[in-house]
Image (tube, rainbow, N blue to C red; front, side, top):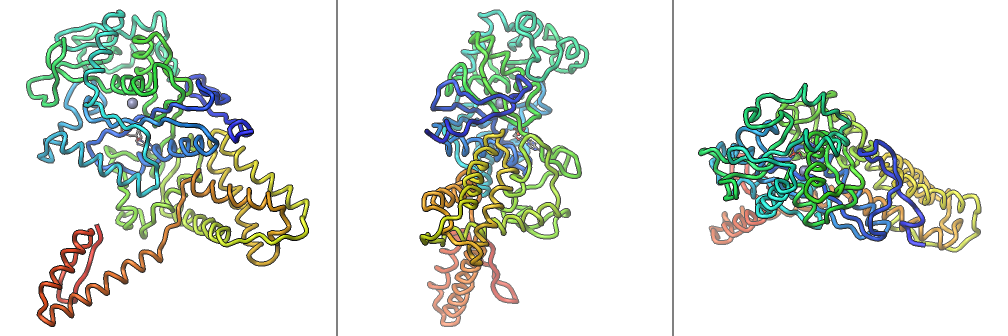
Length: 499
Ligand code: AMP
Ligand code: ZN
């Protein structure tokens, strides 16, 4: 029996509002789409939490044997300031401020996003499409929606007719909102004079003369709506119906609600079987967000360069900190919580180190221990299968860590387990730490070594200078620079910084 058959998964589906057994549309493979970042600024830790939550889902599905196609987009056009239907594009606005071409800005922040995910050991996805690369497909879908009677054109912009759609398909199914209430409470400012109803949303917008990101379309020069891009890219790479769609909870309405309406309107099919939403990272109970000014950048965290932090914390400590809570709960960020997480992370990794050096020596099998270890292995899977409960999974990993410490201290012997159980235990203990939870050893000793080698090269460079061998001293400085190490000569000697 394969792992995925032996250990079923259940998950909370925002659409049904219930816990459901996970049964993908195709037995062995899973299609998963997660809304990616709008690349107009550095990603903060809140964003990281959401991408890490879905990294865990991705990792676990693969661990139990699914073939997963994971699509996460890059939003590089159409996301307007304030998530509105009117106004400046977030990318274009920032490009103007930074005096860059929009695509230069996109490249800069996409690279930064990748670097951050890599620091946190978030795996690369299978496909990472960007909205500007799919303008043709977006225009096609707008045409389809008009042809199917769900969208209308006014003055070069095209809007989705929510009220009409609602009559037969009930808009608001995902977010559990009623159209009457939305009609009452919706924004009144956005393109109000063009829309039939204020809850209609733009799927194509006419570009004003100052709008620099613009494309030709049957309705004149314009640009696609933010909600449309995700529908187009998920459909293109995963099909009209696929298994999992994820994102932060703040995207349920209107973004995901609109995605459902667009898909149903274009293809006649419900696009997603399981909608999953990750909860927010908060600071003093308030959502971490760039606009609220309470966001942390990863490098501020690593360097301890923030008023709420006493010192820096490595990315694996932060990853561990995030894994201690369930993805659907809010998680509050604090210096104290990170200190506690650091202790836990170190204790776990010490157990991991012991496990790497253990050898099996045949002995008298202890049936109680054998049974309890088998139960622990089952619990690892049961807890991850329980809506990806990383907190409960960590608790089991700590039980195994205690056993590792006992073996090291001589209180238990490897031979008290059958060889088969021992091997399974080591395989899954290490597998859950590295492959499922994505923790890796944070190697302070490596940093010490690197620093030591750089100090040594600085000394060699000083000796070279003293011997007037400037060719060598310059070469050391330039070669280090190429590796990202900058030397700065001062009165007190030479200091270095690593990019
Ligand atoms: P954005 O680039 O603003 O579209 O955000 C990218 C992703 O990060 C979205 O899925 C958001 O829901 C998510 N996100 C934004 N702020 C937070 C937060 N404080 N905690 C968790 N996720 C967040
Ligand atoms: Zn999206």
